[in-house]
Length: 144
Image (cartoon, rainbow, N blue to C red; front, side):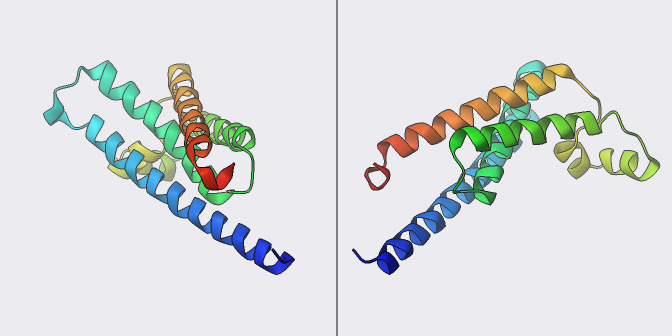
């Protein structure tokens, strides 16, 4: 295999990775929105923290989409930092930010109230996303 064809093969693998990560983000968003749907009748704590765990998983896959060449541990660490920063942002208050937080999109993206429990749920979701990713890579014969 020539150097040029090897580079082309790696570029194709990264493109496939981005497609897979993009699909994972979309799937996690749909499941997360579904988990919070009142029609399911889930108890409030389960619905709330399932959504938070899935939000962390989504952040992991967004980071993976943005940096497919980075290792799983590096992406999980970056996602953990992003999740923590978003949660800490809840401690900052300005009128325009508070107004955005009161919208549905603002509540889903940024949340409304700081909670250490949310950080724990996010990190659990990030860990879950990293484990799913490792299992998927282990099962992919192209990545051995």
